[in-house]
Length: 177
Image (cartoon, rainbow, N blue to C red):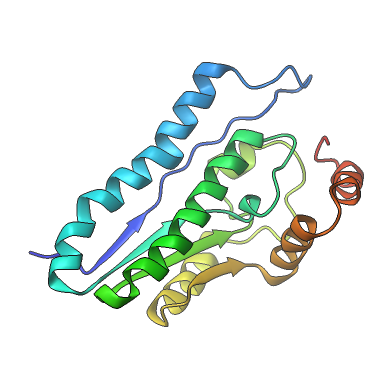
């Protein structure tokens, strides 16, 4: 039976530690294997059949951390930025083939992983609330599904202002810049 809708959602997080000792290389490799390589493998596994049928939809889970690397979770931010950029490229490439691509960039959603991440969690959302929003916007084939709005705007702004200013803001917000 052909797959019509595939969510490529893989995510683990590591951080620089309570004393900023840094991420361990083995942990960085594991994070990229899960957050990036598993998503790419999923896409590569379903894409040929979708292209041949000229239909299907793939939803890639990124994060608002993709906009601007967080100093306490640099590898996580980098892995989610890679997913964001990959999805944007795929969407444009595959549009003529009838394959839809969406990139989801949630902020903080209540979960074990979220609670284990150090730092503040502004605009924390309930999982059901996030799922409803994602479902509605995937059905509308939105290119980028980023939320909640205040945090989305703030993260985007951090990515476009001068790095010295974004670093200052992150330090003031206790993100360990």
